[in-house]
Structure formats: C-alpha cells, structure tokens
Length: 166
Image 1 (tube, rainbow, N blue to C red):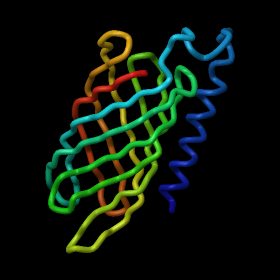
Image 2 (cartoon, rainbow, N blue to C red):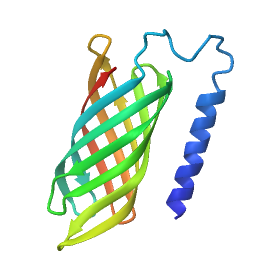
Image 3 (cartoon, one colour):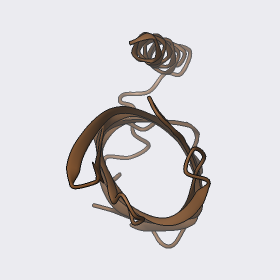
Image 4 (cartoon, rainbow, N blue to C red):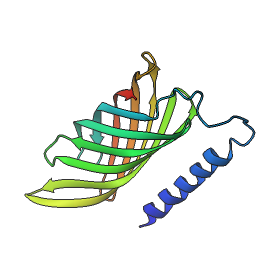
C-alpha cells in the first residue's frame, strides 16, 4: 500500500510539472503541427533479470499510447516474461517526453504469475526509459531500459523498442 501512495504522489508531481511547466511557451496547441500522429503502437523485446529468482528471462512488451499533448501520453501496456512461472502483466502507461527523442513512462498495474498450478496476482509498478531514433515520420526504434517493482520481487530489463505512429 505504501508503494502505491508513493507512486501516486510521483505521478501527481510529474503531471503537474508537465502540464504547468510549459506556461511560458505560446502556441495554439501542444502539437508541433496538425499533421502530428496522435497514436502509437509499439513492442519491445527485452532481457529481464528477476532479482529474487536470480534468473534471466526473455520479455515481450506490447503497448498502445494516445498522445494527449506533444509531451504527455496515456496508454495500456502488456508484458509477458517467459520463464518457469510465466509472468504476465497489464498496466496503465503514463508517458512523458522532456525532449523529443527521450521517453519516460510510469506503469502502475497488476501482474499475474502461475506458481504450482495456482494463479497469483501481484501489484506492479514500473519505470521505463527509451531513446528513439526516427525512421521516417511514422516509425522509431531504440534501446529501452526498465525497472519493475513487485511486492515480492524487483525486475530489471534492457532491450530493443520499436514503435509505429498513426
């Protein structure tokens, strides 16, 4: 419960700085152009280290984001870790862009694990950062790094991200 309160406080502070820290910029809207894409679908292939299990495992992440402004987005994320327990998670993804190529995400959600034929549900909070290299106006690739906190474990991930804008 304590980690949830800290996460909500961090989300409120970051939202405040993103929304009210841009007051000195005078423009008609928060996009660079009316042609800017407002949706992103992406995936990431990661190697994840499960600290308490002392194990490396592959991770597949799919996400959808809707750009609210040029620097703020909301979306959904789905992660699957392929190991003995087959961890799966669903999360709300709150994204921030302080500079155009760097993306930060906060991911509060739930994680499902199958341990000894029993389904275990855990709360999950993730932090993620990605650097994006543009491939045209509608696609980007780049490295991604992540940190997930569970009530029973900590997960470290590093991998490759690809996103499609539309």
